[in-house]
Image (cartoon, rainbow, N blue to C red; front, top):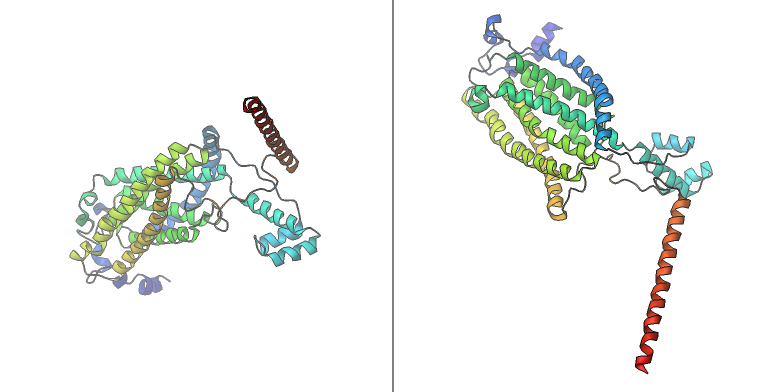
Length: 400
């Protein structure tokens, strides 16, 4: 197996510039750590550790904090237990067609209107609560702000942070500092945990883009580590972490109902995102990998593959920038951020479907409210008529 891997997977032409062999980049213990593919094995148990840590974090920190901020969950009516409808809902469709509604009504002996109401209640029942979305956002916020702070602290004094040509000087024989090694391992472990949890997390409109982003990020981190693109890879991770914690904090305050704080954080996030993802990332990071790197070595497979992954990320940046600009347009011209363009609702249905029976009151209570409003309206009409009649009578003597 080792011989097969060495022959096919670890070919020098794929991982190293022309004219350089694996023997040329071997390092002694006193020269520092050289990145090896086997180091990435630790990211798999680390991903499960992140999942367990997230579970503890949400129960012990996020849930009490959400209550402290005043996060309230909408009360939803639970759909009645109808086995045939439940089977159809889980196995076939959550939104049956009119023909299917008629067929289900005949099978269950229920009217079509009640069938449609049952499916509406059942869909709303599966929608994530504000508390759940708050916990998810707070977990990501905690990691992103910790990762950005640690990453900035480890890179601020490095020469390649200020001069991007230093990313390639001496490549590929470049030792990796212990801090940058752990920066890589923790980032890859975290994104692996996100990919493992993507099926149970809150689904959004950009669900497919999120999956592509996680996969591209994992491949980017793993390949850049194996090919010793660690210097430029740390810059890529730092650029991405710089705006993410602003977005997650804005979501947290949105779920808590702190509208002004949410709007302010969203504006800050938008500015940071647009600058870092549409200016800094393509103008500095992608430019140094596409153009500056050619001053130090000839292109090879790793060069093309690494840059292809960066361009995939840049395409996703443009997609999300479009959504953010739409939200900024609404904020400027409508005066507030009405909703997340990515949608915290599930991707199948955009808006919260109205509960026909109400959230906190029954139909009888709602009917009583309507009757009282109608009675009030009728009284107002009678009072207006009496007032008009009185005014007419008061003017009659003068007219005579």
